[in-house]
Image (tube, rainbow, N blue to C red; front, side, top):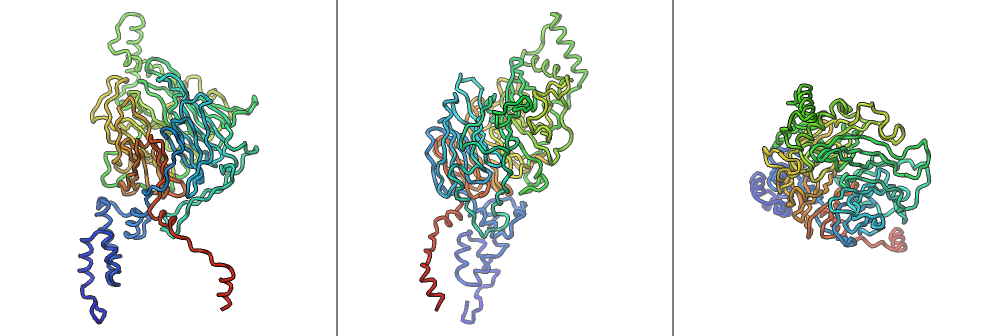
Length: 606
């Protein structure tokens, strides 16, 4: 400014100078004078800073809920949980999985040390309870999930046995009334205001009505359910019923997966009340099995937290769900004529008039398909209604490695153990249930997670080589070290966005293991075998943070009430808590000392 308070440089020239500076230098220069302060907050300037700093494609629009480019820049810089604030070392072996209660007050961890630990989510996290599952012949715990009202915890584990054993078990643990633990409510999750509306945490849901009976003792083991294979994991369907799996071998590479609905309270002794009911019975071909079950609620599909554009720039070729399909060659299948020819070939082989021209595995698969024709209940038609739920799981049709995602509607009358047992309600010819939808990802699926509104399914996949063909179901194609994080819209049944990349894995097909991911309102996070956890922005498809451990990161989880808190679990036997820089500043800010009452009263008199 000159002596008359007139700017010596026009705003346009200051703007051009600021364009050549980085974000921190622009903010520092804005402290020089009022003119520079005004230019340093220019929207066009921060739009340029945003696209350049975060390397977002120019044709990607601003977040629909953002109020300004400056605030959006600050959100991605200051509200991402990337600052390590606490390391938990109570586990003595690899930590495999983490899960939060819906209220955000507690979380659970599973580990190779065969314990399920429950923690209080205070600003300083503390251990509340540890359950040792070794007395139940478990080898280790692998997965946990709170029911909707946080009164029960599902814990999944693996039985002791031979190396090739696939048996596991699900245990249901009581958490007391409303899941608050023996000591009553803990400190509520940290709430920081003011924030833009789209960054504020969603308030907790209203309390659910109490169960008809008195709540059981806190941390009591209520029931145990067999689960085979163990990597079905299990999940809640309602507050008091859970889904488990069983596997029946039919041939060398053919089997049948049965999904069961179990009452969490199995001490009901009445011939009129069922505690278990069969949900679905699904044929498995080429050594595949159903694994990793989860449930999506369709009620929020029309009001998602964040609407992802299927036609967004940079989207790869869209994968479309195949309604009622269980393979890639359904369209080329001539149907009855092909089945008739296969039947003649089978009759000739059985009567000794012909030798099978196909490998035994291929012949077994074709015979299994033939026998299932006319004995499979058809898929549900149309999109899922608001009252329905979607059962989602990994499966396959070409090889044992999970390369497909199966989806089956669960209708309201199926969400209770009441009614016919063991599937007596189905027709005599309907031996199997057909899948409603199948997604083939052409790669090994190593992780899945739902967005908080349940509309979007995020999938960790290690791709097969382009054009690869599976000739032997026991020898799947090699898999890439790069992990693709794919996104599917469960309402429109299409792939959206382009695959997210940054994380890597190194184990081969036959040693590949699950890496759990998690999705919050604005972010998605995943572990990796490269000793890091990763965070991406869901709208901009960019990697925002890389979180270091000393070994493989197996699981990540956001607090459902506070997405600026993230937990990571690793093979280094630790759990790390990460908070956003903004939250850390608030927690570390000195609190004002309260004034003595008499001093305050005296000042009021004067």
